[in-house]
Amino acid sequence: MLEIKELNVITTDIGKEILKDFSLSIQEGEIHAIMGPNGTGKSTLSKVIFHHPAYQITKGKMTFEGVDITDKETDEIGRMGLFLCMQDPLVIEGVTTSDFLREALYEKTKERVDLYHFVKEIGTGVKKLSLDENVIHQALNQGLSGGEKKKSEILQMLLLKPKFIILDELDSGLDVDSLKEVCKIINEYLKENPKTAVLMITHYSRILEYIHPLFVHKMVDGKIVETGDFHLAHKIEMEGYQVVEKTLGEADE
Ligand SMILES: Nc1ncnc2c1ncn2[C@@H]1O[C@H](COP(=O)(O)OP(=O)(O)OP(=O)(O)O)[C@@H](O)[C@H]1O
Ligand SMILES: [Mg+2]
Image: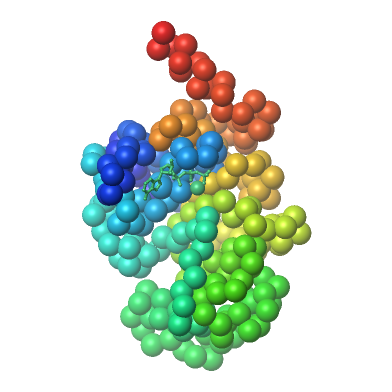
């Protein structure tokens, strides 16, 4: 479904190298997790998939369902069914959550949004996520706590019904009960839409106990250095990332 092949990425401003020969392949219905130390390029990867202007691809290629998306614009990528739940969701002043979602739905389908169904669906989502009803009439993410912003992202996911979901540190900001609830909602969505694939970025194995990954990838210094199953996540939590870095260092000597 998503194929990333030998991607090199630099920042547009100072040309800092972030992703180095990064490759990843995710098939329909698969759940993958990426774990890696701070600053290793995990969020950069999620933004590069969505063509963030702060980054430039200097080598490699990305395809989604066989279509080359390396040079596609963000709106086109969204329309193809990819969705990003950001590590730090953006505040958009002057645009209410409701207007934002209605416009996004229209842009995706190019069909008039049925107001009755839209109001019903957004109301159900707000209730499910235990968000304050007023959230939908406020500017997108404005004045929301860290956890509420993550819930607001999941509300968008529920309405936009993506085929491919990237969750960048969903667990940061959510309290223990909220994390469990939000993961339950995502699992329900995946059960109803079994072809949907998920890429989770996380530091801790707790979230992986709620949303079970088929593959866990360890990412160090801009590339994946080890792939395994759920047990790799526990190993990483016990040992940290140093082991791999040391091994690589020793191999160089
Ligand atoms: N636009 C940018 N301009 C300059 N440097 C950047 C830019 N974006 C990211 N970086 C740098 O690239 C590196 C990777 O950043 P990124 O946010 O992808 O890390 P991460 O793996 O998501 O880390 P964390 O676990 O802390 O979220 C960092 O050193 C960061 O400072
Ligand atoms: Mg990050």
